[in-house]
Amino acid sequence: MRLNLSDEPITAELLAQALQAKGSARIAVNGTSMHPTLQMGWWIYIEPLHEELKPGEIAVFRGDRYLTVHRLVWIERRPEGETLVFRGDYSRVRDRVPRSAVLGRVVAVGIPGRRRGEERVVALEADALSLFYRCGYALSAMLRPILPAAAPPGTAPGLISRVLRRSLAGAERVLSLLLPARR
Image 1: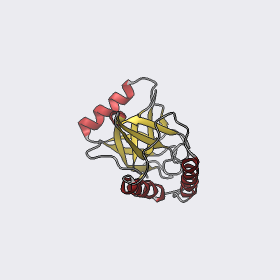
Image 2 (image 1 turned 180 degrees about the vertical axis):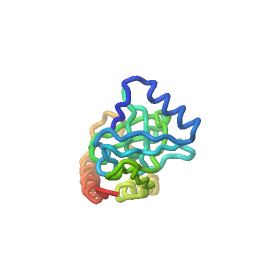
Image 3 (image 1 turned 90 degrees about the vertical axis):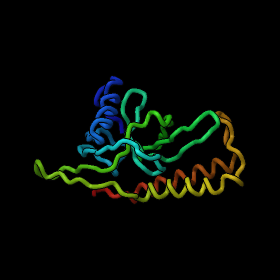
Image 4 (image 1 turned 180 degrees about the horizontal axis):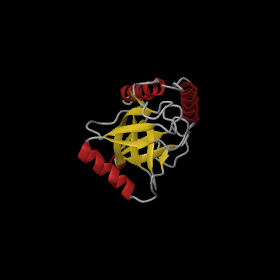
């Protein structure tokens, strides 16, 4: 989900300053890439990162031209540095960003009521996808000593890697169906 508040980088800076000064911020959801977890017309409540972001958590980061709200699915650790891999719940596209691009963590959503002033604020809790990403990342960390080294970027993946990737992508799609449509 892209937050099209402005095409200017100042939008990200204003959000970063608000998080630093107030300790939290609230912005409107504009987009469908995080559907059904986050829906158009809802509000998201953001807090600055006081601790490391974990796979499965939803965060706001600086994209190419927009602020983006997606779920952290993986942390790539390479000798050249760390890259965070994000994905929208309703999107197959993955965004790779440096840790410095992350502005904050989404901690709650505001869901408008039928009448003005009837908004409900609901804390974000672990769901099927967040548990999937956390378990996958933990399993990978445990198996890392016995697994072969990852192929360098730009190298075509082998047969086992392609089958594993397709299986995990299928599991992501199935688990996306289990996300609550309404909170």
